[in-house]
Length: 417
Image 1 (tube, rainbow, N blue to C red):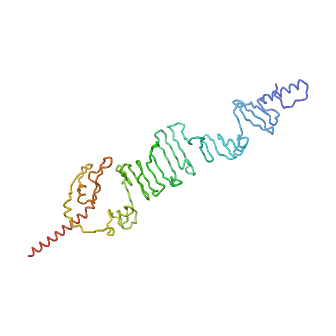
Image 2: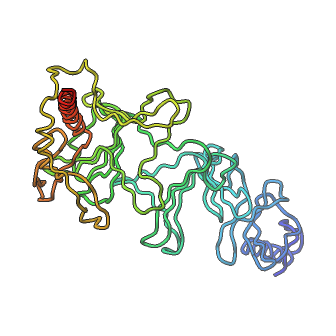
């Protein structure tokens, strides 16, 4: 059968009319799939474009000139116009402004109410707005996985400026099962960890069901602002101010308010305090209080050339029952000064005392109890404050000077007679 030039049956003899009708029915049957366009086109006429390597099914629009190709005759794939956010290509019956469109080469755009809300690209997906993960049941989880596990890092990059376009704040999990995890803040701004309400911030060292916090920043209560490190429990809290605490969790509640540990010789001092000039005379570099009352300090002179260690408070207004030290010599004679080596420092010899022996003569100069141990049997060693022995030495020296002066006077009388 021949390709008809139009859809008009000419007035002719019976055989020619039959031929015209058969050609028209054949054109309808195969949707004008002759390999080339029909000579005369009609609005909404179907046309199977079989020309070329990508045959497509189409129909002519109302102008009977332009056509819409919408399905592949080779594999059944659908085609649509590029569209836009305001006029998406694939829409819904009751919402013509919501659907999908081609935003650019190799990109699929999602439109909601004529507004682009997402772009699917070969390099990733852009979400134009808030991303929520709301499962029907169970917990909500967002997994970020690399395609080749153990060979690539997984990261979340937060970009809010034009300088740090790869992430002003990045959270990265490095490759492998033992890889490090990094939180990286870029720029000179402040990185803050905040709670909307007054609440503690806690740090844990494992995620097991019985995990315990190892560091707590107190955010509520009278002791807010304290930083507390733990072994097991935090049963001792600072009432006010800023503090580091380390509770051992043992039954005798031994704890260090602040622990400084230095390893090696090349790391500088374990504690470095630098008071910059100008410095007032007797300015406190360190101050010690007990129950909010001053008990000692370390001070500098105004020139910053001399350090004073003020181990105890000696103001007369704090003292009572003041009497002269009169038995200095007899008590001094009970002291037993020795020379010795420490077991851990055998190459050096020291002058000093045995703590419990000195404690019998000057009790306030020694802390601890002879042969004391803690709840686990570890030794609790005694210590000596040598400055507490000075008043006894001065008292004994004064008594000796007085005796010497008395003897000198008697000798002078005898020599004069």
